[in-house]
Image (cartoon, rainbow, N blue to C red; front, top):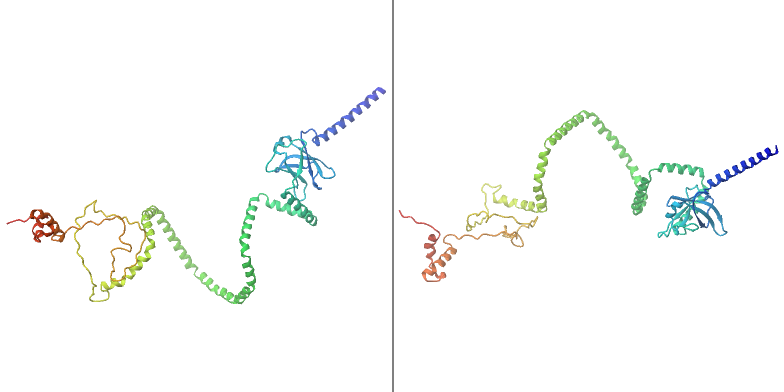
Length: 419
């Protein structure tokens, strides 16, 4: 009997030991005692009430570990951090830390900030210092300054407002950013106009008084407008007819354009070179047309406008020497003028029709064929004298005057027949 009772007691002790081991194992699992980590230490001035054991440790928003314990050494706060071994390669040994809140009323977390020139990956037992850059100091100052404001407002109402604002802006970050950029540009452009705006506001009472004085006339004009409205109502049948006619015209025009679209396109394409030339010389049109208009009185006088017996002006008729027959390929005209649009001023004085514009002949590469000699001309007489001089034993300059008269037709190939 005693042996059986002793067995029960042993079993009870074993049961209690199993329960204790199970509870201890569960607590160890909860505290991640069996999870491999890289332990490091963070020393900071203060942690505040929002940072608790188990808080997140992040690098650029990525979770890399957690806070295990928080203690103090009398001078600074000491945080034992447990970093994940697979994320240690992302964290340099010269990293710094900031304590940032997740939300205005939420808990804080540890944000590790890599420097611009990162060192080797961090190792177990490393000590991380607090970020003391200007940006971190400004963030801390903002958080310290906003705390009294948060104490003054009602947190539940502010949380409701912020929650509604977050839901309204959810998925609209790009639009909100563009709106802020546009508002900034608008305010930047509005700033120089602030003096004018202040002057306008100062003049607003006077303008309002003017409108008050003009209000009776404006009301009278609106009353008169009813007559116009009544007329439109009375003429609605005619207007309907007009709209129908316009609609028919539009349909016909559409049909015409649809049928002749190829012809219109071809006409436009063929007319383009001509239009380009006209556009090139467009600057000279006002001058040319003005000079033509100035010549209208002279032309009227020349052709005797308004008289029974036209009084013709004085004409000078000049007979020039023949330049010979047209030779294809030799005398083919060429237009090589590349001066562009020009308009020369009308000549003054007696020379109403100058041969060349100011500056001399146009250098367009053209040539002037030599004029052929007329029968009996000095040029022909000189040629005949030169040809007969050796036979007569004299000088070409002293040849007889009758030589060109007698020998010229013979040399030109003339034939005399006898009957």
